[in-house]
Length: 130
Image (tube, rainbow, N blue to C red; front, side, top):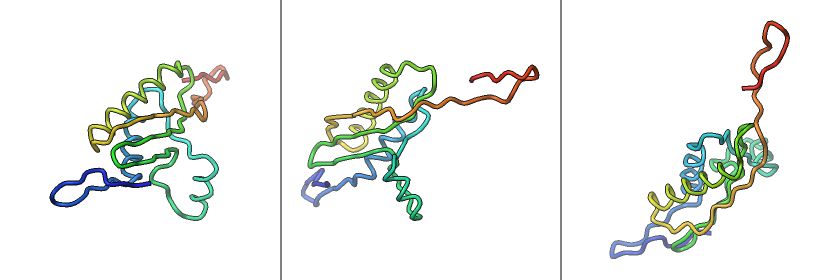
């Protein structure tokens, strides 16, 4: 859904959903503890067909003056998820509102997974988590 984001004497300015999604993704990944985005089954099928989704793991609805954003994230093991989610919400809201002039009415965080990275085996045969 796209609308007239800014109407003035020169015409209209329209901001595409993908633009808002890219801004939201960058803002989300700035938060320590966010490993990446998870697109789910629909994005996986799209990628198999050879199409890349610029907004993998993000759903955006842009209206005339406001937007709602859903982020599907993967977090790092050991983080406090409610704190990370709040930081992502704040950072995404600030970035999107500053760059687009749209009012962000919702930033919904959907935690899709936890990333556990393993280091190489130590000499004694144990595996240590990062």
